[in-house]
Image 1 (cartoon, rainbow, N blue to C red):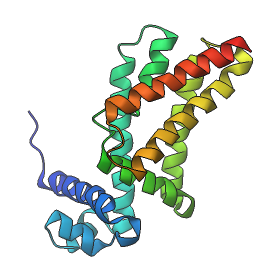
Image 2 (image 1 turned 135 degrees about the vertical axis):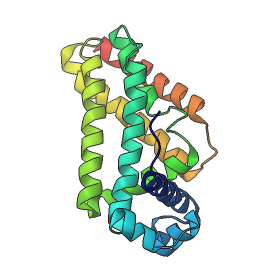
Image 3 (image 1 turned 60 degrees about the vertical axis):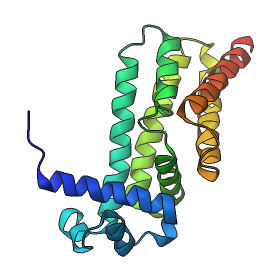
Length: 196
């Protein structure tokens, strides 16, 4: 078993502290001082391990994307049909490993900041394209070809709406409830676009 390096531990502590600070105080109060206070270590560590706050924010968002990708790959490994693949992709976004109040708060604040940050915008665009492509690929095998794009957009809007609603009220629903609601959106899209 490989030993975990102190550098990796410190970096993860700072990423976790960034998520907690976003959850507790919001983006406007996200300072090097607040993050280091949350982590219980000197603010100089942020510059030492990341180079600065912007690099720490990028690392935090990349951490989310890594978790989301790992969850999605694991779920897709068990999918044997287009519908199971579609459900796997959608449910990955509401997996308990990823969908929790702290992550929802931080992730939606990253969305809000993405138009003003080249790095966050690029990462958001990559993730959005990945999710869109995976959902679209499954829908192309489920609904008529001309309806797959609209069905995909409908499901993505439902998913984004759940995330935004849960960001506004952290205890509105848990991961299982959010996933079940998203799947109802998938069911509705299949029903609607299969008829047209």
